Image 1 (tube, helix red, strand yellow):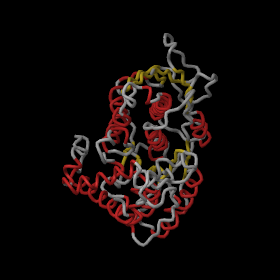
Image 2: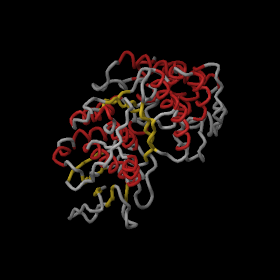
Image 3: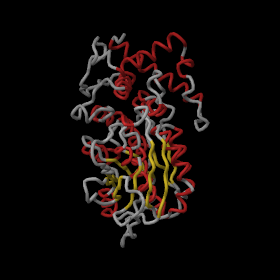
Image 4: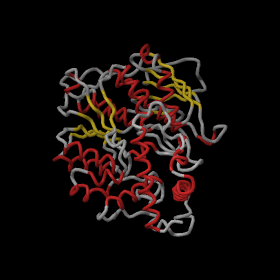
Length: 425
């Protein structure tokens, strides 16, 4: 699939079969896509001043997420893997041309698609604000409305950090993002942005590239901080429990982008290399890469606040599909429910659509994700943990293998206790 992405002033000839995507503006026609207009307006409204290459990275991320919406997986030859050829307008095309291959490799890992990126001049770069606001915060934290990001923001403030909380607005989570930011540490500086990516016709639902936009929002904000403008580096915290970050294939059928790779250490390492090459002094960190979700809850620095807010957080991969209720049976929901059990003494009052996991029908114990976890547990019991884990930690970009192996084993043990508690067979 071919796309041409840039502001409405950007023109490229000889590609009549391509999808035209207007960045930072409205599509202007039914056969066009668009992305980023609301995010640009909000950044300008707040009068913050991100680095030029951070704006370019956002243009790239917006182009990618729009392609992710536009390319239907079931139209590909194998029903999953797609091929994208994207022409993107940026402010510094000569630099980004040298990063086309590293970016394509990072995207291939994230989405298991094939990406070709080409860069042209004419990209959007706002004029500096007349009276720029340079926030005094000392780091950036992604605040999604999820349980892990809630714990991460709580722990950062308890450790004496002053994080700038960045949210990607998602329908059903916007209000809780605001509430969490207001309650943590006496109130966090908070910026909500939405990619507003849209493509004509039916849109692909898997959305494996959306995490690139969220992290890029964090990069954009980090380069706007006062300490960044003073020449210092800024940590960007992507807080995710290690089990979901690694997301080991539970069975042979849950491979590649069938399991999300949002905070996988290989993806974050590849993206960090691009940031370093761009001279963007932003360091991506996941402080919980060797912790299970249950351990995150048990070790959280403010147990009183977590006790009040934990059940309001969102973990479900099908939250919108179930009318903003959490299903209780997808892998993220199972990891969440297992974490509450591991936390101990704190009832899980979430209210799942499918509560009794052990019920013997297709909605509960017979559901694919529940059976996948059960099959993984059975495989470990039969053949041993290392045989099941196989090469999930084999990437040369993964460090701390011993610690990660132990964490995955503990995470699987939390899931085992969940299945035992509900009598899943």
